[in-house]
Image (cartoon, rainbow, N blue to C red):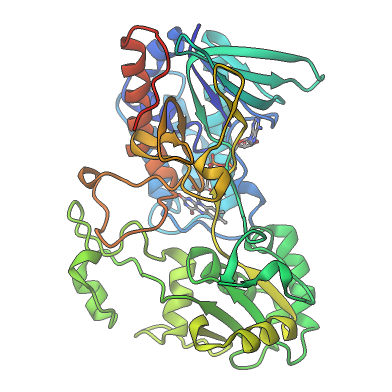
Length: 438
Ligand SMILES: Cc1cc2nc3c(=O)[nH]c(=O)nc-3n(C[C@H](O)[C@H](O)[C@H](O)COP(=O)(O)OP(=O)(O)OC[C@H]3O[C@@H](n4cnc5c(N)ncnc54)[C@H](O)[C@@H]3O)c2cc1C
């Protein structure tokens, strides 16, 4: 039986593997058996579809290759042209297409190791997970030729990436976007893609006086505003024509309190990460989204941007809000992501209701999958975009943070470590019935 099946070979799914690689533990884990399953023809994920820049520094992507414990198969990547290209962005924000190429290169190296010493299933779709009475799991898979089979392991890691659920949500009680009439609607996931930006450019150039409405006040919303302003179609937009309609002011990242105060940003004690002293380390806007906010909020040393305004959604009544949505040339819901999930069945074949399937957090403590009743599944883990993993206090982060920690660095470090250790711990326990953890 395998140690673990990792379903989804993006930056999230590869997180525990990359953590183990950094600490000299990967060869031994491969010998115990890891299967990685991905529907794509390569490992590395899906960031390449976005036509924007990363909001993490290039240096954060390089760190995993700099670790002393790296196996010989990964060490040469440090000196390859791709790593050198990334190194040029060590202190700035690389394009996501470069991050994607970099992750895919790491993916190729890991794929070689998996194929040689463990198991790799590319062009393969995972369909369902079945929990077994002996405490193991079985993952149903279908390969590119339609052949079905089952992978048996002590645990599985679900890392399918994120999905946007704007259709299900309500802007406020009784007012769902799905019930509003709109000229053009483009969720932020599409708006930030290369194809979506092209489409948006056309809409912006034909918008006339109509507003461009971005709904939401976090990373995606400010990234969309910044990306739109870079389009030729935005040149003729009038003052305040792009409207960010938010429920609350975004939090902003600063390297420390002094820098925040110099930027006229008010810092509450709970905004400071005790481990690093950074302000809004987990939840703050970074990169180009942060610069967008600074321009709208007219912070010192940055050119003021008058084409975008941020408005409080609560200041509008239902009818005014509905009218604004109907009037807009383009509406971009930017409400973040929830993890995509697979159907999970218990040992009697009964489908279990996962919390993520109801729109809630996918994981609880130790990044274990949560059921809708609040219990978690001991041998199923979730990692990657939209899981809602809450970092324990020991890992730092600002106490005021109540959002999602979606970061490659965290997958490859703290969260990857949590899952790796929990998997090892499971294997040390005697096999037996699955006990649902409270
Ligand atoms: C616009 C945007 C910008 C971001 N920028 C940054 C950033 O700058 N820095 C940062 O740290 N984080 C960033 N993130 C957050 C996050 O780190 C990335 O989204 C990251 O790519 C998530 O990795 P993932 O593995 O969860 O998802 P993905 O990269 O989407 O990988 C999921 C994998 O699962 C596979 N899969 C899905 N379903 C199945 C199935 N049924 N069977 C088999 N395989 C399946 C897919 O093929 C894919 O390879 C950003 C997110 C977004 C949306």
